[in-house]
Image 1 (tube, rainbow, N blue to C red):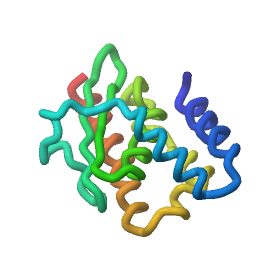
Image 2 (image 1 turned 135 degrees about the vertical axis):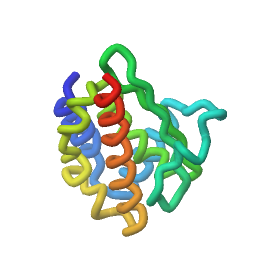
Image 3 (image 1 turned 90 degrees about the vertical axis):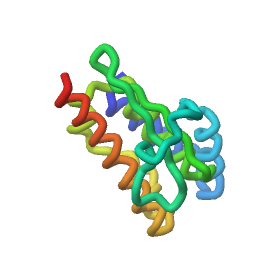
Image 4 (image 1 turned 180 degrees about the vertical axis):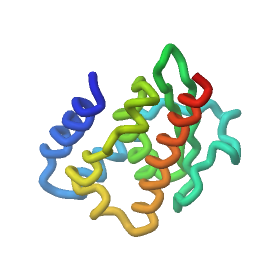
Length: 139
């Protein structure tokens, strides 16, 4: 599945809900399915700067694809990083670096987050793209 297909799938999933409270509930549910980062990987170097909550992101570059796992101490934030992982996991570093994460605006996520959470979302996207750049430089 391409990054575009994954983003369109998320847009379709969110279109089912009319109310933002229902969308928040869905985001929380997504956090429960998040590929969990190993406890010993919850280190300061894996913390994403700029997030209101603590968000740890780990990655691996295997067989030409990026593999992500994460965790957060906040349920909404955990769901948000889960959405990003759903789109970017198993993609090539090139795809990730070039990707436009348009689903964020299409589902109205950015406009329904507090300014600090919105900044955190941008920090998460930036960090994931930086990990892809790191993988490219080592490849």
